[in-house]
Amino acid sequence: MEKTYLASLCKNGLLGGGLFLDDERVTYRTGKMSVPPEIRNLQLPFCRIKAVEKSRALFLPTVTIEMQDDRGWKFLVFGRRSFLDNLKAAMDAYASGA
Image (cartoon, rainbow, N blue to C red; front, side, top):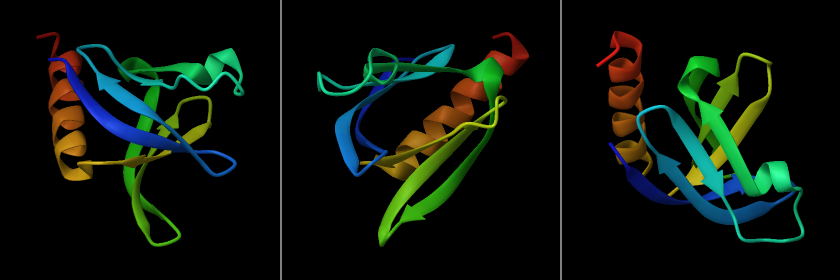
């Protein structure tokens, strides 16, 4: 499964980019050169995701992905419901080894 979503990372304001969902991870990418390289291509492997929750930033619906190292990443995702449904399906498939 490979899906792409327009998204913004909620970190010191909104940082536009995209979320890429594949069979092993969620990757956030942005072309902004003013952010650290680890955020420009942020990889969130399914095996390290502790929780995924619907959340809000002011009045905007967002998604928070909490990692096992207790870092949380909040994203404004266009098509949040589709993203959450596809992420759940991908994580379930990953967990079952399919």
